[in-house]
Length: 254
Image (tube, rainbow, N blue to C red; front, top):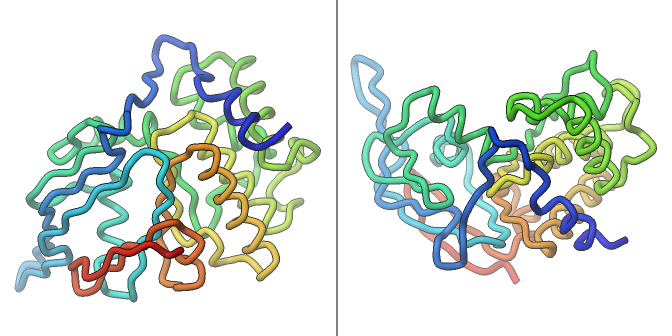
């Protein structure tokens, strides 16, 4: 079975009434950022990390956001991930304005609409692979039997069907990142947000993980990859560059 066919099977995997699946069409961008500014007030002075950033990302796009340390890249990632809100401007995620939400609302949006993949994997060492993958489904309110089945199915679709009972310490770095990707996918989010996902991997494992992201993109997933590495960014179909809090370039990598 192809990756495309496999992911089609979980295109609408959650039939539980407490779960709201993302609703976005080609006319509704998954990400719509308009003139957002982020100012940090240290008490003695203010730092403007983002200076009127505007862009959009359509459903099914694979976009890399690239920038050096201090560019505003991490601040932008926190806003796109609903971990923070802008000082001014607007940010809509799959048609929902999250610009002025409080902490509880942001947490709900993160669980419903965003699948995170981190450089450090962020797996619980005491849990095996499928139990790590099921965690977002616990927050979504699914029953234990359905959670287990979805977690195991999703692990199979990222090539870890024979590793479902292995704990993180029993897996290679590349395999741990695949568990993290499965965890990001299992709720069928509107957006996969990956922060330096190959940063802690050797070259072969990094290539395998980036190939997996390309397969997910080809199956219709919307992916935003945050990186400082131009070679990694080139795997995306589109590159947005940020420097000094401003987008100074938006181009196609291929």
